[in-house]
Length: 65
Image (tube, rainbow, N blue to C red; front, side, top):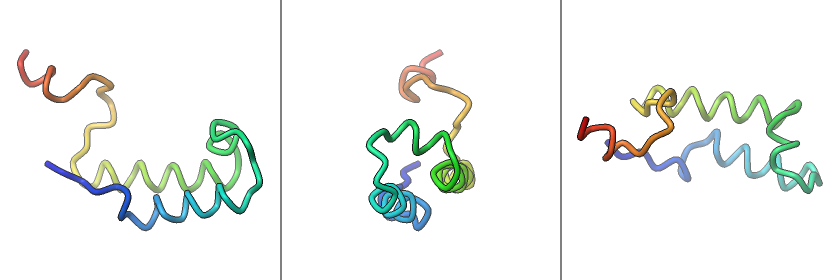
């Protein structure tokens, strides 16, 4: 299953908000306020596309188990 997150509206909004925020740390931006909102929306879109967000291992290695 392939998902082009770079074309997702939530990803584009996240990028725009980061640029406009003037924040120099992406982690700080994602952890607070507007960045957290956009990241949550992007995560929900990923889950809706069937992306398993609970597994941090590469999907190719987990399918060999």
